[in-house]
Length: 328
Ligand code: PEP
Ligand code: MG
Image (cartoon, rainbow, N blue to C red):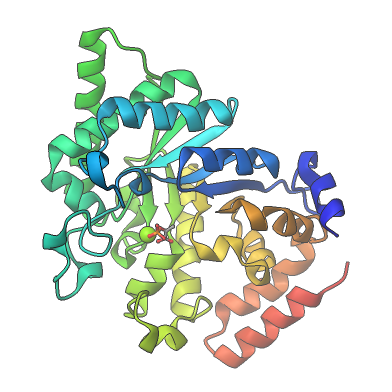
């Protein structure tokens, strides 16, 4: 079975009815890009850059410098040999603390994290943006902003990127002038105000881990409520459907980079809803590809339409079981 999967490395992920799906890898450190290449990923759909900032000890305890970050991003970009690398800007804060002062926040997931943190620490943000832009001269880079919810956060993020570009330009430093900027859709408010996003950004990427946490009001780090974490709750399916529809209408790409993208039980559902880019841990990618190769979207769609119209969890589960086992 393993050998069969590795033979699929160069096979594009195309359904039986001819729809190509881009399968991308999630990485945490630049060296993870090798695993992405190993499984034949079309690119890196999510580089969680916070791992360069966390768990630093001793002489490294300070934040990574622009140069250190540049080298890390460049390594990932060069390893991917021209395939797109989507670098998510720093997603730290109350729930992924950089310093001990952030440890005792009452509701860390609702606190100062991700873009909220970066806009409050513009020096840290600007340093990272400069490093990412510099790496964009060495391949194909996209910038992805986490946790956006407000129009002013979009505007300020874009203004900071513009400022970083201006600085590099005046210093004569190379970068890709056309680098695409996207928004993570992971706060329900974002999924409910998509026109605000598609107007200003080049692409969307859904973070289902946080989208589920915030929509169902269950702390993703709290084991006591783990049993309530339900990725096929009708509310989640509606938000996903709204997001793929809004992106399609606006003519911009939309990916899923949260855990749902790497759950083989959901692959047929997601591609039949219209998702064409799924980003996941590299290890699971070959199996997801195999599932796509034996799927027929045209024949799955009637079932998926029923799922999206249904507000009965039992019926949703039954229909998911049907599409999962459908042979074509
Ligand atoms: C998500 O929220 O789904 C996501 C991809 O980001 P993270 O898991 O790093 O918060
Ligand atoms: Mg997230």
